[in-house]
Image 1 (cartoon, rainbow, N blue to C red):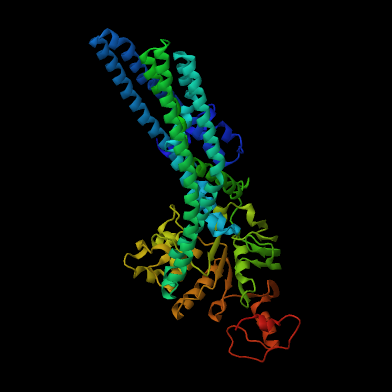
Image 2 (cartoon, one colour):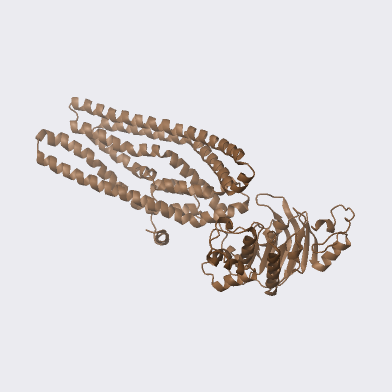
Length: 614
């Protein structure tokens, strides 16, 4: 069964939830994707439960065989009866093995379908968590939690819980042999179940601590891998190795503590099981001596007792995985609910084409309440070009992220043709926006795939048009395989300038209405800057609004409007000629002009001239 087929069946299949999962599902919300995936898995578990019932019934065959051999075959010395019984028990064992293998295969597929049912929500969470100010230790946690849950669901753990409802059947069989045998088995089962509950209580804290420390050491390892070049160039290997070793040692200590708990209790349960089986033999021998039971009952009751306690022992052996899976489910529920996509707007808005308006906008970094940008208000008509200027840490990049919807507005709104950004689905809004961040952020794939934003429906004409607007077409043709050249993770096979120009082509792909470029010429040579200026002019002629952040004047010559930020506030906005004239009158240096006038007279806040970088 494929994932797609399983998801199609989810919409039409309706069945009761098995008892083994009802307690867990009752704690989850109906709108929770984890709860929905568990309900789908629970419906599929009905078939597994049926197989478990057949397997447990067939498990009685060994006890019945021993009972018949000792009580019928040996006294009668009838070989035909022995042959017939042996053939029947052989068939029962083969059928039991077949059903056991089928059950394991079904559990593996159910776990895979559970994973597949959450893949969209998980990927959405991975893409959303960095934008919510989540600590790095938690960013990859959803994927690790999903792996833990899938591993448990496809292993021996669920079989133990599916077999546990059959324990009373085995106990009833032991009572039928003799009440003393039944009471002995009942007390032993109660003792092992009590030990299971003790395991749960003692191991909970140790398992959680080990899981948290494992996530922390993984974050350090990932950071070292991402920055391997810097680590090697700056001689930081030994120092980072020491930090990772400390985190790893803390994890190993907690893991040892958790493993000790499981080992001690698991071994105790196993010893108790051996004692019970031997005690069952002793009780049977006593009953045989007292002529209250046969030798077959003595042997059969010992075997039946072992089968009754087997699910509990398996549960204890997999309790560590169960605890990790349960904690993973709880984290998945919280994370996926917090990062769930908002409901789709009831009406699909048309492509904007008139105006960008910003109304009393305040922007704060994810996870912080202190605004970086506040009180910014302006509007731009189609075809306008805005130079966003200001000294370092003045809020330019933060404002640009709010304009394209990366960071939500803390207060106020960003509107396209009067509609706030949250009135579009993210996929639809992305088609109307072009964005080139300081860190270009290319993906492992071909040049063409990166330019078209990995759109499977993209056509060659649109890709070529974007590359030609960005002035990168000829550069791409000189690559080993042209547009089919794979550029590696982060575009590692390209130079910094090539990456920036391919990123520009990606930004202008599809003729977006709003184009935001953050330091687009930081790595460009003279030809690249000329291509950038030309691209800005073309986009403006196509009635796109272009916003450019740059400290180099060449990128600003094709823009007609200027805004100056200082400490997150707009201290100047208007036509570039007027803003630059005000700066010159204040004695400052405007980007693109050679003069360097004396510094303006000090004021309670820096003058306009001081706020514009040279």
